[in-house]
Image (spheres, rainbow, N blue to C red):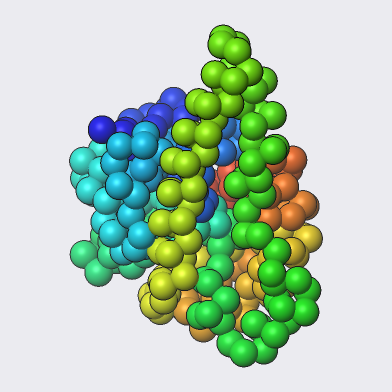
Length: 260
């Protein structure tokens, strides 16, 4: 069985911070970011099912949110809850926040990092603008086999190239299954209105997603605050994690004392 809550940074165990990863990814994508998040809270990554090649990955955001919440509540029975989600993980985070609020729990922080609904859920005008910009681009370069193989080859210290390639092909099949399930979850999820505040972090360079998050989320939340960090959708984690971490640190610190 895979581990749901993966410890990423030690801190007080009475106050926790939870990070939900992107489509077809893992909590490993936060390993550099957490170095720059300044907080006394322990930071945990929320690992989706399927990366072990044994468990069946979820293909509904709602099921994934409930799966994570079961683990979160065991670690932290009561709020306030601090939730951060990147890309697809942002949709999971807002769904968790919805469920927590409906149960009378306090959400101390809901931060969505470059997280948008599938284009099918956007307005016609937004879909047209995305198409003009090149909406047919792949959603994630993470599934680029040559690039992934070179990374895998560097990290594999034993075995012949053929053995390493065989192991990589098996790993790639697992990754594709997880990615495809996550894509189905993204495609069919319809966000509901959130009676709370969303802190949205957008990339300065727009690529495969809308330019203006307010046009998407402004009507889906009681309050929306948008911040911008350098880089594109992937670069905010890969290349600008220090600035992103500093921003998230400020958001955590700004939480009203009454709900800390």
